[in-house]
Structures are given as C-alpha cells and as structure tokens.
Amino acid sequence: MKPILCVNSNINNPYNEYGFLSKIKDKHKIKLISNEYIKELDVKVTSIRMPPNFNRKAYLENLTYAKKICRSKEVQLSLKTLRPLDYNYFNKFQKRFLAFSVIKSIQLMLRMRNKSLKNSCIVVYDAVEMINYNIIEELAKQSKYIVFLANDLVKARKLADYIIANFGVSPIVTDNRLYALKIADFVISSKDYEFSYEKLVWLLDNSISNPENIIAVNDVSYNVPWNANKSPFSVELLGSILCQMQEVDIEKALKYNGICLKEIKFNNNVIY
Image (cartoon, rainbow, N blue to C red):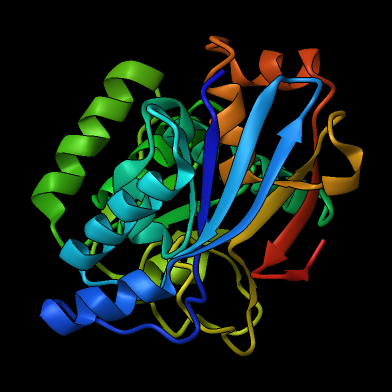
C-alpha cells in the first residue's frame, strides 16, 4: 500500500488569499501532526494540518508542500478540509465511497422513522453539480422517487435521461424550490439554503454552519478492525485505504474487512 497523507484544517476560520506574503504565511502554518503505522495493513499514515486558505491556487500549493513534508515519493491522499475543494482531488473510488456513505446514512435515518429509500421522496439540490453525480447514481440503485432540484433545467433533464436509461428510474426535474422541498422526505444538498422546519438534510458543503430548525448531517464515521485505539475512521481515511485494496464492490469490501458504519454526524457532533 502507498503511505497515506491525511490533511485537515480548521474550516471555522477560513480566508481567501493568494500572493507572495500569503504563500510565506501559509507555509509556516503547515504542520506535521503525527506519524502512525497500521500494523495489520502495513501502511504508514501521516497527518498534516493545513491553513484554512481556500483560495484554489493557494490550496493546491499548500497541498503540494504538505506532500513534501510526508517524504514519500507517492502518497494516497485523505483530504478532510473544505469538502467542495477536497472533492476535486478524490479519486473515482473515493467519490463513490462518499456517495455510498451518504446514501447508507440516509437509509439508516429513514429506517428510524419507519421509512425506506423505496417509499421516500429524496430531493437532490443542486442536482447538476459534480459533487452530486456519484450520489445520484448510488441513490438511483435503491430509490424510486427522486427529485432533481436545479437552476439549470436543460442540464438536469439530460442527467435525468441518463438515469432513466441506465437505472430505470425516472426523476422529477424542477426549479421550484417550494414544491420540491415540500414533498421531500430527505434532502441532499450542495447548496446553502434555509430549509423548512424539521426537514432531514445531508449537507455536502461542510462549511455551512449548523442550521436551526432542521435535522442536518454532514459526515459519517466507520468502525474498523485495525488499529482499534484510533477507531472510528473517517470516510476520507477509510476511502484512502479501501481504494488500494482493488475491490470494486464497496459492500463486499466493507463486509470482507469487518467494517460497519458507526456514527452519523454534524461536524464532530454525533446525531445518530
């Protein structure tokens, strides 16, 4: 296995700067937190904290410098900073694993309300944003009642045609937020929006502050059989391990390795 580079940041104090002085300042803020070894997997895990500078150019330069600190020719990234930025650097498996985790957590939350994905209305907002693509595919495998809420209806209809052709599910396409959110049993959102009272919402943008009057989640964690004192594992860290095991089927990979979903969270607060 490649060594794993875990990168995190305090996203509660973000800034957006790019220039000579910010480069110097950021470089001094990039800190090595720990070096650990997971004996069962024979893999080294290095944790580094990056400054919360979410200028796209600065983010890439800081990430490049963080890799140098790791002192490995090749590393597998486990990024847990600002998710909309991190997502651009996920590999295909990591994107699929995030999507799987989102849908699995929704399934469990609905079950607690005596509902299921098959008989619930799931709204995806904004459906045409790239971070939602794998989530929609995973959702279409299990849900029959899907609503694409989008500002660009042309793109949303093309996406709906793809889902119909490949999964046999016919999503409703609309730009009417009041209608879509009224009928929703669960909302998956990459947008910041003031959702109605007591709605269940999965917020993909983890920079959004804890909304009032709704049940919001934005993260999950897993129980793993290795390195027990460090359990649970984040989606990002577990994804960076599983993607190196060459198992395409995520359910099989979890079952084979004795891994199960442990916590459904909003940031560090456990909701379920």
